[in-house]
Image (cartoon, rainbow over all chains, first blue to last red; front, side, top):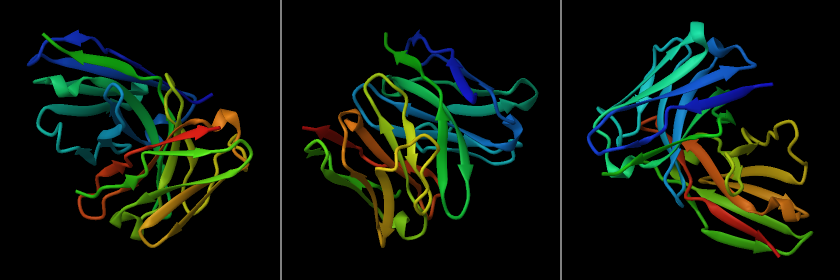
Amino acid sequence: EVQLVESGGALVQPGRSLRLSCAASGFKFDDYAMHWVRQAPGKGLEWVSSISWNSGNIDYADSVKGRFTISRDNAKNSLYMQMNSLRAEDTALYYCAKVSSGGYSWWFDPWGQGTLVTVSS
Amino acid sequence: SSELTQDPAVSVALGQTVRITCQGDSLRTYYASWYQQKPGQAPLLVMYGKHNRPSGIPDRFSGSSSGNTASLTITGAQAEDEADYYCNSRDSSSKHYVFGTGTKVTVL
């Protein structure tokens, strides 16, 4: 069974840092790009960041560029997000997702259950 | 950056057909993927590519695309289809991934 399990979410003060992890199982992790997507309470989905299979291509949403760093360890089947200079607007449920592509199409499947980050003093 | 616009809410009578649309310039270049999200759950992929349905998704879900609009149609909506639905595609210029604004589907 393909499974993604996020961890590391917490209540943190503005300006502080946090590191999220996503443990993958059930598929060949180093064959796939991985992404982080977040959802603020009561709001829609927002793409945050992506990393290619070999970490050669990395991208960020403008809202987190310069503050967040995505990384992966293929030997450990794990994805990470280092979040620095956190702001109240970063409060959200953070999902990791495996992304496949083909023929001008990309799809996020599966998703983890999410880990909650709350930024508040 | 590119935006993907969806109607905020639609309703459908049990057993009837509902179409959810997603509009954006990037859809002239890329196909959309569609996600169903029920309260307290992670999003679930229900459609991708030209008209590909993942294993386990009922065949009452279908997808189509024309110009700058992608559509997800539920033919014979069931009570369990009540959820939020999001489209996703890729911005043609920035190559960033973009989610639609979301549509809440209510089954009456």
